[in-house]
Length: 303
Image (cartoon, rainbow, N blue to C red; front, side, top):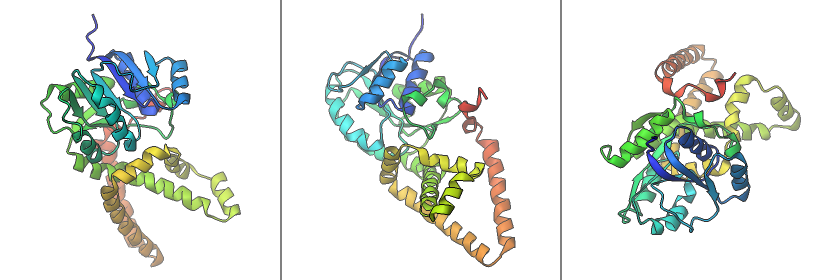
């Protein structure tokens, strides 16, 4: 007899991440039932057609008893969702999320701690694609990736359940403070995304002929880097609004280094350029060596 971690799970937001998690929870027999909610009727129709959920609902007020609720919506929607669902929760329930900032999420969760039935375990599976929508989801999206949990109580039964859930899906789970998470992710995720948006924006402002040729002759490096600019704009808008301080700090550091490179090129300082490029090359080697859990791209497995 299969022993599920959860009897009934509600995934709020069934885009790329929510639909991939739904598929994994069913495939790995982690949750006996997985229910989805999305306010977008087009998304709900896609989910019904793809049949990876037990059911898809269109009204959070028709609340049932769930022992796990996952917020997989843009960060700016959390407060509205929590205001709607927390009054209905009258039995033990874990609420977790997949958001890319954690200090803001922790602050949101703290507002609803008075409900004694709810345990909040903030989380961030560091995985994704530049695509959005349930049709792009797949259960191995999280395989060999990191998941960061920022709950201070690592000994609680609820924390251990969420940790086990992500591990069964194939993730390596780490714990850190919400503030530290946001500073780290500002550099590893949020700044690269911002640069990709900026480069594409710059290319659109070039005179017509050059703009066409930039698009036409995009080499692999430019094409692969700027693919980030195809990501969900609402999700990234919320990330920058809610992780403002950490992003601005890291952006300031990046700007200083970029200015140094600009000066070196202007002054034909080949020694400076070679030294910096050599140092960054070594860092890249370390990333490849020690970042094994985050280097596998599931899309490559069938290539």
